[in-house]
Image 1 (cartoon, rainbow, N blue to C red):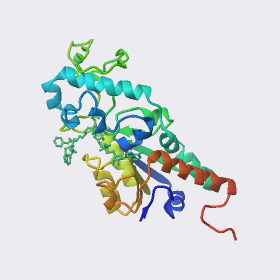
Image 2: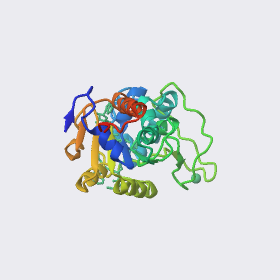
Image 3: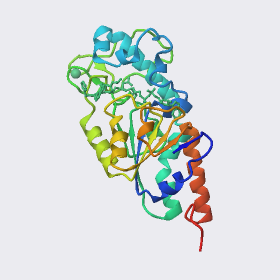
Length: 275
Ligand code: BV8
Ligand code: ZN
């Protein structure tokens, strides 16, 4: 079922109210309304002549460590200046918004492909990062976390020599998962379990081109879970969904929150007629 960007799909809220365990898979589209460029766009500036998928790879690091470190520090600076948007807050408050209508406990677990901390800063506590985090740099040699890094400069520079590990003097690398690297096993296991146990999977702001994250909605749909996608563009996921809402996350998610708030005020289960 498809809906245009302003109309909440007919039975979306009713079916969300029937769910008791909701998994949410988010991608770079969540960041659009926080003013942070999506993964592909982030290289439009200084790094426009580089393919982000090369920069985000062990080969990219081997080719030019200082260029890659500068790219990640620029992205870390962008995220530190950004704020969570209405979509992040709506996800953080979704469980409470549903419980307020029907009084039954609801579990919402977030699986993000993003490497920022905006879900956490919006109040989401149950979240895993499939692709790591800009805020978890570690030593490339001994693997120890690198602590107390200086704040990144606001002024983007093309080259920046990575700091050294205080333990073994190895180079510090970004705490993200590069293309060709395995996902963090704990996060991947948890993500698969949350999707396996959920009644409903919300897929928000992802093109569905990166694997194995993109496998999650495909598996969920094959297992008969309710799969709902919110994305202004059709993606690789859309054909594996039950409800596709062509809308921006920071419009659609607050709209769902508003309808739930109204349903709570009316104290009637949404969509059901009182006897
Ligand atoms: C791995 C961290 C085992 C770095 C990232 C099949 C199975 C397994 C692997 C593969 C496979 N096929 C290919 C592979 C290899 C590869 C892969 O997927 N390649 C792709 C390009 C084909 N996968 C891997 O290497 C993974 N590792 O599988 O390990 C292995 C080991 C060795 C060899 C083989 C297998 C690791 C992948 C992790 C890569 N790291 N991030 C960094 O950030 O620098 S992924 C990176 O790209 C981002 O994190 C992000 O997740 C991803 C981009 O995806 P999206 O989030 O979807 O963002 P995108 O810009 O594409 O789309 C944005 C969407 O938002 C759009 O649809 C747009 O319409 C929408 N949108 C825009 N505005 C809004 C909006 N939506 C809502 N509201 C809005 N306002
Ligand atoms: Zn070290």
